[in-house]
Length: 385
Length: 229
Image (tube, rainbow over all chains, first blue to last red; front, side):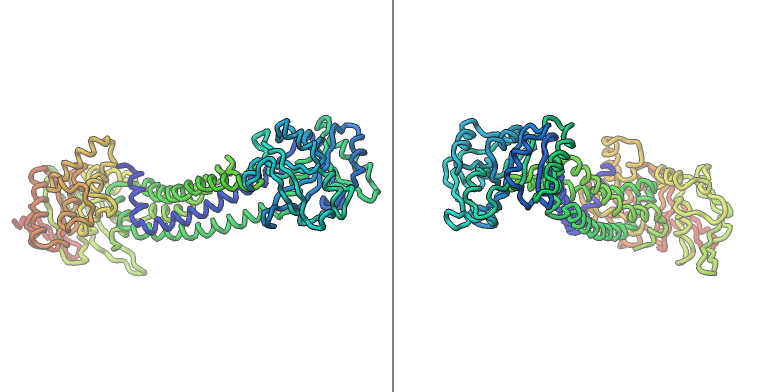
């Protein structure tokens, strides 16, 4: 037997009470773990993008289009190496809730700019370029929807109407699957020809949602952005050019202040747990007043008693919190397979933060009962029945 | 045998509100090594308070208390804890075993305060349990044992670190006569065979018969009655 055995025996002497506290702590840390993973995914969106890629959007906001004629003018700007463009399609498959991240793109330039992020086989790329009704999709996305290369796939849009049918549906042929070319890339989307889109929409012809360009070097980014925006100043569609990272971050922030939401949810959960566990620990130690008195009588020093009680609350926090973070990591892995959010994982900094929260929970909830035990007068303790 | 405990002009007073309650005043007492002393007296006479002073878990308001030449009244709380662990075994009326630990682990508790290794501790625990006749109940928890058996475990816990002195506060107060006699015989054996100095507080004249010396504490003074058995 050692001090740890005593801590363990004390912790599990009231099994139901301890189990309930463990469950409460478990769920608090499960919430933390999953939300920290989501936050990490959001952070990742903000940090994704190559250093030498810029995005030009309409200055009003990125939902407003740019004339397609701007693309060639941007291509002529000094320091610009490659330009492509894309349009948000607002796609879904079969059910509106089955949202697909779908872009109408200029395939040759788009694939070229993103070659370092995701890859198609040469045969798939050739097939994609050859057929204007072709589409390519992320391999995970295709698997999730049961698509195979060669399948005819009808995609719906919640924005545009196909003027050839009068319906909001377009027919595509899946000709290739996009695979990530680097670890942090997650091509969980659909790409198809902008030309096909442009000729069949009922409004917004000859426009693009945004232009994406690669500069010759990141050192010229600022100068290039300034030149582009100056070029279109005072035009009907003024532009705003920024780095791809800044654009992604701004896009993510449109969906709400995720950090604040996560902070509020996690904060509420932890405050509740702090109250429950703190109160229960105070009561549990109070019930043991006489036993603590006996241990002191036997010769256990105040400091050791303090450590034994504090060790109990720390062990409780770790036993409840560690499995929760483990399960959160597993759950995030499963969710990552379903949604297009790379970085949806419990990253080391958030894992460390979780451990820090566990230690804080253990210390805060254990400090008062441990201090009371330390200060306990033996004669008073032995006199209490 | 020489004096083990020497109390000189010890007083104990409590302040309760505006009132100062004197438990005893300028008490003198010498207890020799190897004595089996029973302290009797009416409720509130200060028997348990005296036992607490002897065990170093309470302090006298004034006066000197020495144990083997060591002035307990001059030790810090930390040193007093160390002194208790090395020199005193406590036996309580209600056993005071840890309910979440089995008999062996209860007995092992005082040994956690020593430098003994796991093997040595296990051997000492088994020996102590054999002495009290519970060698086969090591894995049993307090709730699985009778009052008498629990008190035996408490005695094993008190002797396992081989202290010089055992302090017993009404050790048979919660037991039937037959079991009480068994426990008292065991204490007598520990006194006679192992040389333990035993100081026992009791209300029970039958229990006091097992002691070699009986002190009656009343109104803060001792009346020595000598051996009853």
